[in-house]
Image (cartoon, rainbow, N blue to C red; front, side, top):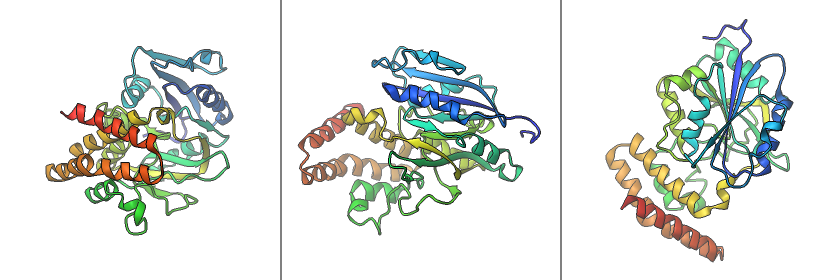
Length: 311
């Protein structure tokens, strides 16, 4: 329990992989959000063997930075745990490099968390705006067997009113409320909760690690909350958009790992079969209907990588 009379401490962890100028823009923007209501204890940048010189000169920014350089890409979950190791802060913020902070981006979540009435809130996400200042609809429902199956069949695209997306796109994100899961681009967590859960599950190389974390938090009595009194800019897409076949492979692999971890064996087998035997043809058909042969080839490459790993 944090005393309301103490000045809370915050650590920010940024995992970088070939994010170019986005990283320096993100780190520089942290200055916009600093004030006397909290102490920014440290900013840790964990670089996963970037090859684009994105970390060059980053230490010249006028902030107290710690830079961890990995010799290989260890994945997002493991890099987050690296950055949070030995933290002495009260709160941890896992921040994507394709974001920028505003004046209220840090003070408002900390103020909310410090209110003793919100002790059961363990994770906070905030309102995100894009290049046109539109509010992105980023909160998600927890996956279930039914949703995984109908999304593999593409029914959420054909009949969205009957088969809703995992993302809560029907909600305008203009009011604060408890949600299943907030997006990992701005993942604000109580450090004591992070310690109780032993951090992110490092078996998730990328994708689904924050879903897994949020479910485990809920299982021990903590909720996730979407807060609209704070905003950030989020470009979206991320650096994984540059490697679409790899991105698809990691999504599918993490989806199967998540299903095996959280569902029954029967449910896992159903999800695995629909993912491997039906979903690739649904994806390829969708790409061909759009006239995108290149996307079809990327889908085939992504599934080939998945099959190689499974076999």
